[in-house]
Length: 173
Image (cartoon, rainbow, N blue to C red; front, top):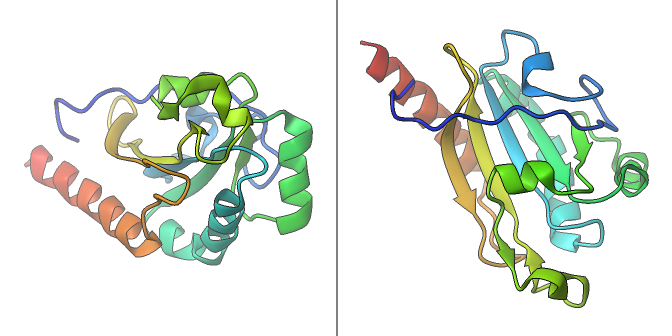
C-alpha cells in the first residue's frame, strides 16, 4: 500500500442485497482485499440502473481479484429496495439517504438542489477503489464523473484494481 494513500472512511449503511447488513468496510470477510464503491446519482437515473445491472454480469471478474462491488444510492431505503426487487443484484446495494458516505468520499455535486429538476444537475457518478490490505483501508483510485453519462468502462475498472494491487506489492518491497 502506498504510504501516502489517503485513509478510506469506514461507514455503516443499510444493505438491501447480498452481503452484511448493515454494510461496513469492517464487516467484510478478511479475504476481500478491495472494495469498489460505485456512487450512484439517484433512484431515477437510467444510466445508474444500467450500470448496476451491468456490474451484476461482471461480479465474478471482480471477485476473482478479491474485490467486492458495492453500489451506494443517495436515496431512502424503500427506493433502494425497489432496485433490488427489480434487479436481484448479487452484491451490496446500499441506501445513503443523507448522502453522508457520498460526501465523505467527495462525490461530485453540480448545482446543488437543481439536481431534483434535471438529470444533468445534482450528484455525479463516481467510483472509488478501496484497498483493505494493511493496517487501515486506503483510497487506491478514484474516478469522478462530469455528467450522468461519464462512467468508467468495467474493463478499465478491473485494470485499475489490478494496478492498485501491483502498486501496493511494489511499495512493500
